[in-house]
Image 1: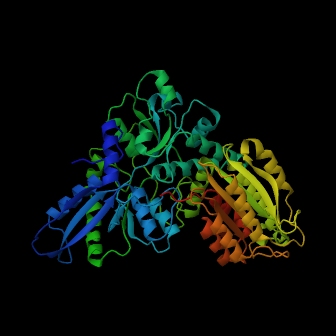
Image 2: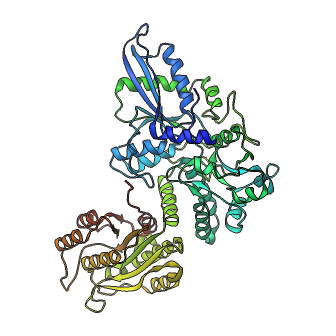
Length: 582
């Protein structure tokens, strides 16, 4: 039985969706084996495209007398989308991954997990310190390529010309002829790999880097799909030139996706562009999950030996996958121009950069990339509230003597540059006694960035720490919450982002206290009109406890930049925060 989750045909795509939602199990039980007794039943969750190869190898192993320390081994393999297993793992550890959301109810925690990419393990390990799977070695590989309809690829010089990332960047930012797409990169490893590679290349452009990165993200977002099958269905379904011109013309996909798509004999085949530096490959890590029973762990060792034996390469070839070393076995139908071996070294949470400028094993880079993607592609309604109390004028040694105020303004300005015209943004400052008996001052009301961008930038540049100014924190939080709630808009994330040194509420006029603020916020909170409060605390004197209690009432969160020089990355995480979908 052949099983695919990444297939491109219409019937295959429909079946794939059914399989994702229900799960398909490959179980093999050996009732009695010579020389063994009892039974250790090993459960394996694998990405759909590699599951059939694992199933065949496991069946042969069990039929041949699989055992571990004298105990008979049974293996049950289930094909599960990596994002669904990641949601289960994240939920178990009480953390959230950007874009992943809650577990769907059908995915389960296996003994062994073989996702399509080690970036899933990297993201989970970065978020959950208690998640520590063992082994983690690659059992298969599929390079990430830029897929293009062959006529489109030929127009830009394929296959004669060796194309690079700058060619693609030019096409994405300087032309309307190229219609790009991507599978949501917070939920798809190939989409994430392509996004990282494009971001790395744009980052080499000096002063133009942020503008190019933002343009690329917006171009990709215009053609994003939640599911890979939906994206594949948008490639041209007719040879008519007009149809080709209107259809999807470029997307980061795995080599396996392209081979499988072409195997369905579409009207127009896809070309696979192997750009250099190569994006991070899908590497199919064999992860033995923490807490696995010792006998099952022994069985997992035995299965791993089977999946790294020489004959497994041919099983992978039938599924359009390469072996872990980047070469292919019998039955593999290589795309035109496919190199062998191919693919980047395995991603691991270490100093190894993945072997290329485009690959990365730095979880901070991955999270920053995903945060930028979310901020740019999911418009929101935001009120930025910036502390201008006297302590914000303090210099930061790690930033060359710049003040906290300088760093805060720079982070806010950079963040504003990411916002598309679809965002609505306002700006307040706060300290104490800023006029009218208030500790806060509205500088720019919340309005579309399309009309308010210049006013926001102008007001940001004028912000200065108020010499001797105190911190009317709690009165400002309450007023900001009421303001955003009163203008609440459906279909957007309505939020407040407060940047402060957050030493505490220091209001010489008295004002509301902590307990009073919590009572008022609980009264105001409306689950039908949620308002997220995100507090970014600067420095190592942030009083976390009271601020955590506040954000637990409102939703949102507290982010602390103990080194204020790193506020830029923290600000990016904050503005990308979205409520967890249920």
